[in-house]
Image (cartoon, rainbow, N blue to C red; front, top):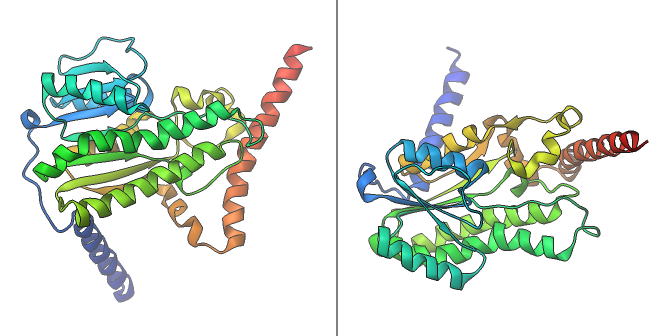
Length: 302
């Protein structure tokens, strides 16, 4: 093997080792035990959340899902559902009291619930903008305020933040969504610091997941016109596999999906002209799809 290549591979492996250990705060957890763990998942009745619930329940762990919508499917035996408005702290506290009485304290919190609306800054109604931030960002604060203290007291637990590739690149017609997911990333980063330096709970793990486009009801508008969009779209299973791996291995981390798009996390370190090129490419794809959609609707109306 070429000496230069061998050195590069060694440096890469060394970097990965130290990065991974730093993310774990240089601590280790006891092996995962299904009987002692309880996973609380928001937005678990559809999309990514439903797939995560199914995969975790199949592994034998107890799962509680919170959602504003009732499930339209039969729950596995080890899964419980509670209807909740995760943007309302009083409602969260009421449901939390019931959860603790029936199941105990959750040891893993997956802030998965999310909404997305299309429309430019000027066109999108204020109510939809507010809902985007309340569900995609504010709910993370409210859920953590309710359920993190028990994890801190035990110095054991895991908070999983479902962000997005939109955390790194803002696109036209989805500015509120991009802002809310950038906020989710900042929330994750700040939470890590508080756990370590304010709460002295280094064994409480934190993970943030950044999926690109995922085939869920949220992007039905894109998948209905996929031939015009021409960007990779993943299945919920791909995202669920990554989330479940973080939970069951009890490892903190930042996961970008697909991994081939990890360069997106470095967009803001690029020269301005390159940043604009990346954003223009993605926004242009959305705009072309919109134009094609409008043309199809106009033709159908004739």
